[in-house]
Image: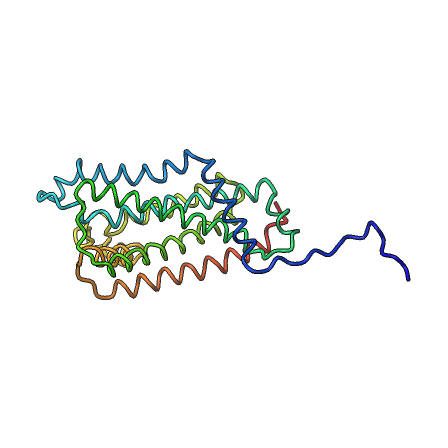
Length: 266
């Protein structure tokens, strides 16, 4: 019987379970900690927005001093969007330096790399959201929600973060450079400013109201506001769920297709 050639490549068993996902989540979290400036800005920007809108614009927009109760849900989504946008930069950087091609030669699921980026971003953003809410409470935010209201609000926020992070990950794969990924993602960060985050939709010009009311961010903000502050909503929770799930499905499908098709061209 002929002995196997010593130079024949050994077949490596495929990694099963969620071992690869855990490894890539840990890798992404460590990279985030090393990128202290981005991590700090992801928290400082929404905190500064809370302070500015409470102490600078709050008196003009609501003389009773309760504007902070209105503005917090919008600032939370701005915080989530800003934190998720860094995922596009991290993914595009991985593509540019060629490490993704190395990962693709390993016996692991292709989606494990993206899952690591997304889950790490979700954890970072939930921590940042907690910091923002704590600062808001310190400056006068007084939610009326019970335990179930808080659980519902955190669930909506987490679902939004998951959807927008997967979308930014796909943008990182589609962009040809980290700079391009950063630019494309920056466009999406304007959506909360064209919503009910800072002022009611009814106060906007009539031609702008339908755009602001039916874009993805407004129903999500109104749903969070209702859960935390007890405001009245009708169709907004259904629209919020539909937008988040729809964005998530499209982003996962788009990102998976881009990962399989474009990894070797970089």
